[in-house]
Length: 420
Image 1 (cartoon, rainbow, N blue to C red):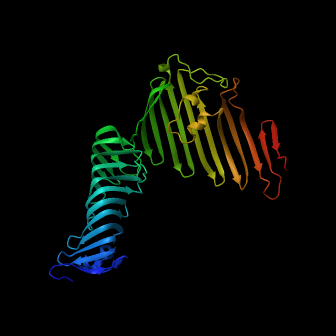
Image 2: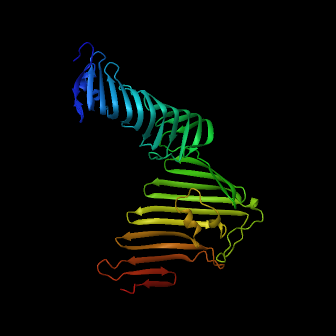
Image 3: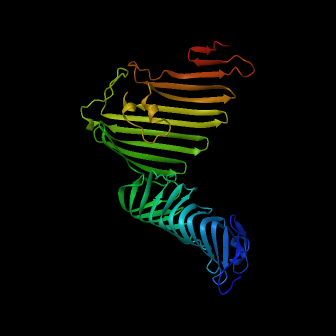
């Protein structure tokens, strides 16, 4: 194998990879197991008996314990069972995937040092890295000039937000600590953070969310600070304090629940005080609105509930009530997910309904009660349909004539398409 201490190649082949099954034996001291096995592929491979090490170059691919390392050059030491690789290199493990310019890793205890690192844990949706990363036993890392984010990033594009600093400690599945760092938006430092702890797992945690800032010539400087309360795994509550220096101050509450897979809903409530607006009127001027006056105290209540009673029978309820006709036009929704902001601002009236729907194939029937809050008609009728039953039969079933029947107190209406 060797002559005068010089290494001789155990295999050399240019232009295509060579698989060295013998490498798995060379690097194991004592009885081998499946977990100890190491497989190496490369364009050029050599073994130095004096140092008991294998060197590989060109399209290097090393596999062990479910991990795969690809690099330009690599050295594996049998005595210390260490891997030293130069890149650019890529490493996949059962827990994470990373890119780096070099690494020095211990195979057995999975510790070591990497440089110019970018790594991600897909199961948790987190990405972190740094100029230098030291890996400790388990899933603990220390990042030098590092960063951490939960935003999905693409190569060449900065994350929407990240935490970065001189030193970042991260325990995947636990918590992280940032020292002498900054909160960054698109990699631009925004706020200095001398010390901050943050979760590095996918379990929901109670605490302050990131504040939101804005500015408007009508509303002034805008600050919104949300607080998230993870009540349990089936429900949560987000409380948001809001200040608009030229218009209002207020608070918004958004409660979400899902006790079972067939039951889900959301309730939102908000209150705003318009005293700081003074005598200024709304900038919305339109003859379409019945009342353009802005009250000092403004509020909103919204809700959405869905519950599957049987496989084809559903209980549903929707509500949206506001204090005045211009509320939805002037005040943006915060965290509610059941109705988009653009839809709210364009509503002619709100619909509040409660009912039960049964469906079979293309036919359906149900009972419901509907109330409206009209923003245009001065003679508002807020309860237009206190109770009604309806049924729809699709004509594609059995060649029957399609129709829709609605039963309200004192009347029965049947609608049949003209084409029928």
